[in-house]
Image (cartoon, rainbow, N blue to C red; front, side, top):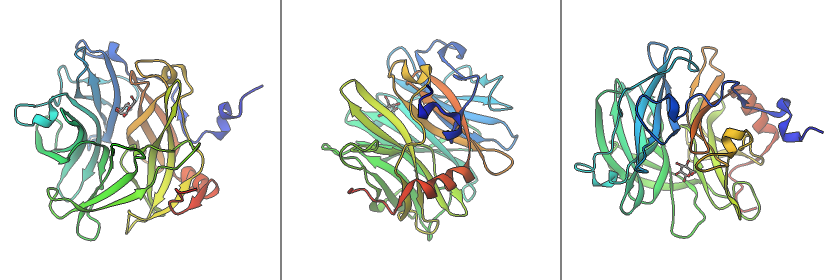
Length: 326
Ligand code: BMA
């Protein structure tokens, strides 16, 4: 008998047949693993992945891979594209990880938010680029521990907004928003999505996955929930819809996860049981999402879905507002 969760009709996100798309064996230089990746479409139409690469020291850097169709024939930079720079940025001493990339019209630049791994734990940094060759590093925005950040691609009421996930010494860990007039000074910090309690799939620890997706109904958020089990953590994905004018206001939030580790390459690897998307591209139809995710902290995989279907599903499988205390 087929298990319900294996029923493809229930899947909002369909895994690509060629998964995993990229592994360490595809890399032009020797590395341990390639996994959590930002993704954008370049003006040329190419897909660019900004990949977290872990070398055999255990530290990570970022490397760009480009492909015409977003699936095959990847042209990978022959050496690291963005390396930790602890001399000028001591907060990058133990590497840089998990980039989220958005195109920002007003700046005429891509904004990359990434984890900087400092001696005091992971914090969150910002760099700007036009071409993924030269970078304007803006340094650390939020001190440790903080991760899973993405800039909104435009100002909200005149201010920049970043979604992020501080990690307090004692869980739970919730998703926050912070605002800035200049991308430098940040304030008005506010929790926008609480980790649930008890046995929920998204209890105790949640975080933003890729950058928010602007839709006519609101900002669609894909977030991860970390289920802690005696055998280790399970990273799954869920949906929330945030108000377009006020992204700190959650309109509705899913009750069930939409994707979890099922395939062999998601269950087995350096950290099994992890699907971790940091980026997507949207097809020419304005609806098809190509979601790139790290699988088991070991490879890069692709799943495709319809934003419209996700919104419709959310209507049926959600509770209004943040609804965390239940
Ligand atoms: C999270 C992040 C991710 C990683 C995941 C599973 O805390 O550090 O980079 O993929 O854990 O190990």
